[in-house]
Length: 354
Image (cartoon, rainbow, N blue to C red; front, side, top):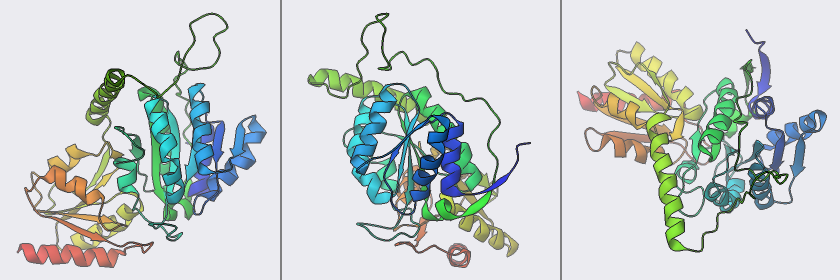
């Protein structure tokens, strides 16, 4: 059994990345994720890695593009407004079919907003992380241990599918501390990257990594091929955790830190005789449609709980497709919902269903 250590979420993210073979980090400080970059600045030089604080978020993401094109595991981290600045580069990386990892420790917005936790970047991460027809893998941890575990998975899946991945966390997870252990397993990085621009020593043709296609037919072909890959990912890579869903009349859907709050409310509701359950998406792209669809067989109501004005709720409604009501409760601007507030919503729905 691996030894447990007490770590802050942001630092655990950074250590996990190092342990799974990421020795190239490019970033720029912004609250509440600055500890990720600070930790990398201390650790990477000691192990012969590359840490570079870029002059801007735009520079940082393009440095990731360059490193990823050479076939190494590369990472950047930021918080909401910083991710917005990276979106052009994310689109270039997706268009170049390059694997990398991006961390978004979300804060309140829009604009500079505030530095408190939020989940209002869901649309950006799952719908429009950059211009053009594209998706990225998006993982949503709810504990510090899961932040660690998903860093390993995100790098592996990014390599497997040759596409960018994101850990979508929030300021609460980034700043809180919990005991964690790091997996005792070999790095599963896909060593064979025949497409990498890492020097050919006159043994092969030149590799070119590029997202520019001047012929419309050629660009269409690459996009169609990419979306065929996305269909495979949607079929095989959906992840969700279910809690007391089997006989639930009211199924809550929440991700990340909010899921911890929702689970507490579900426990209390069960103690008061209300059949509530919880589905916690672990991947928010691909969204776990199968788990939601399966729950429709027994559920009478859904309640989506978010730290936003309602973004993931749209995906829940798409899957439910009018078969039963989908309710929403959210706090925004950095305000964290409480279990008591969520319980009131559960009781209101239960009362209306009688």
